[in-house]
Length: 237
Image 1: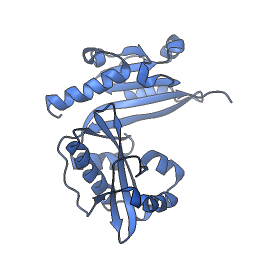
Image 2: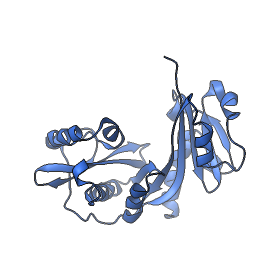
Image 3: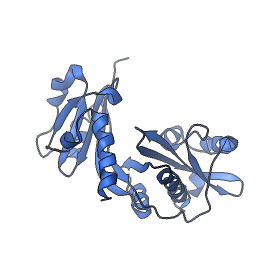
Image 4: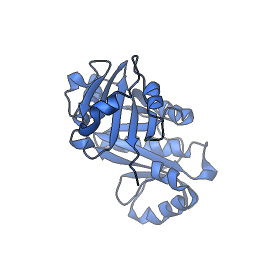
């Protein structure tokens, strides 16, 4: 993967997220912890898998009841997701998580966005579905953002949220009429360079079932680090 310095920064972030030591993070096939500060209030399970090992965080009040639903070894992201695919849970994943320290330059003209571009971002939001925007949209007033234009129209937008002062978690969305033409890829490339210049590690996360998205990440220089599965309990109305 990347150099040891990058790996240490990433591992330190995830260890703090789980409330465990970096040595314990991927030290065994399944390391179970209860929700630390970062996951406080999360009503479900969050698990991270790397090289045949996993750490999973459970709500304190239902560790045993949920643990009994886990599949037998070998514990893989797909098997865990399948085990909780019933009507009582909402499963997100398995998801690909990748990091980059050298990123390919953008292939299309792209620039950083400012508050004055908010109306253009609003126009882009209007032509995307609500789930698409919730997954990939960004508020240009609140986050560092990069955009690709076709004429005066914003057709691709990437933004990042800083996690733990270490990671730049990137989201990207492209106008439906401009997809598959490298616009989103260029927005991500530009933004990743912005993140690196700020001393952050760019993070790209997407569902593992979304192979085109993973190919974009890998073409830019992102390298797979781990896979995640999030399981949220469905609360009764």
